[in-house]
Image (cartoon, rainbow, N blue to C red; front, side, top):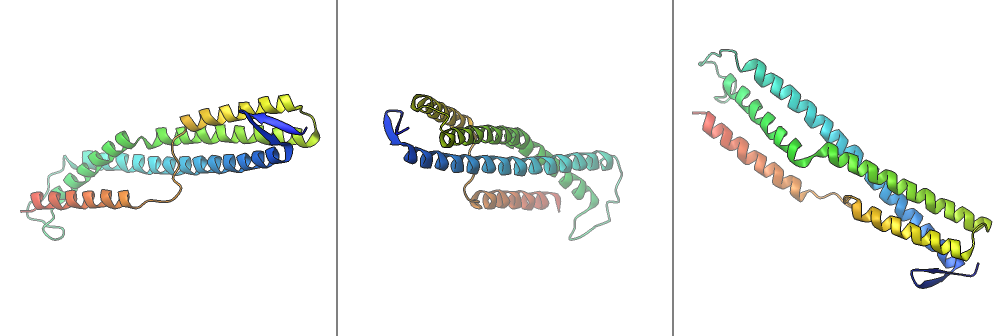
Length: 190
């Protein structure tokens, strides 16, 4: 085994082993990124789902109760305002769950992570075969081309995983939420 041809490029066996090792590390990083993202999205999906259930039950249960119109809880906020606010929270969470599809995205990331794990195992097996001298140059070229093709397909089908956390969009969401809460209380408190 002296030279391997991959996509028209000739590599020495040692160079190719270095390339394989680099691919393996990148595959593991992608796998870990997708699994971590899947876990986080699943957690968010679960939390929002339970908050939605509890808030809708709260609003349903307390919407039929008569309230003392003169009783004020804090800062002019009455019991009806709390029930209406929780109803708004339930509606917002329902919209967020429908729009963001956290559970669906978690499953896509989990699936991509599993596919990257399979690709990493293929690369590991190829490294073992090279080190043991069990593969010819032609077979090695075919295996390498197969790995590249699978990786390209996998990259095309996978969702993005964040390299670093971004807080700008979270700040915007927080600002929008505060504006709507403020409008809610200005409208309901007379």
